[in-house]
Image 1: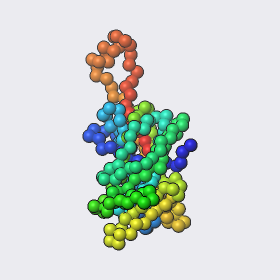
Image 2: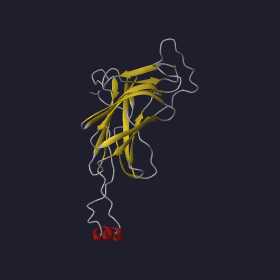
Image 3: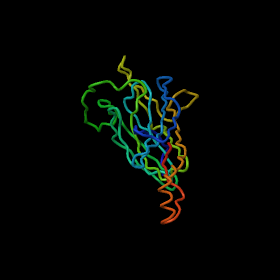
Image 4: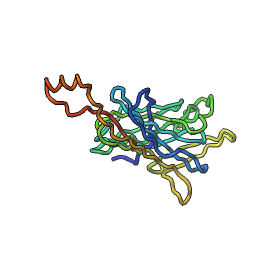
Length: 227
């Protein structure tokens, strides 16, 4: 079984069939962080990429979850972006539900999961400021003719976003799902990729197929969405 899902990413493709964006990413208070994600459907190799962005206060470390529709897309990869390191995650899929869970990452020099007795080199640079892409997920679209949704968020109190204040050197964490009563926690985000219409075959190719093996009903295009 899998936790609530979060986090996600998008590979920036040179050519894309369509895209949708999710909620804006902002940090309203020291312990309130938001995420945003964007989905892009590409025309290369049947791959679709999901982009997740996390906003200020210079993200130092995080753990987030991502969910997706496992009956429509296949998980194909996860990597850090803009210098962020991904050192742990779990994959789960059952029926139509899929999750990339407990995605843990950090900016070099800010690893918050060192083993007892371990040390890390001092950070050469502070974490990037502002809304920055921290990791990227890649999915293969198995159902281009239907919309797909992807969700990224903190599912419980083991998930968090830790921010770094470059003025004071202070680390502050937004932990667990957002609670409007306390104005603390991490806001999640949902992004949807709409169905892609099949591209019509060139007249000459279509006639050749009809005269030979038979009629082609349609051409599959691909698309995906965010947990």
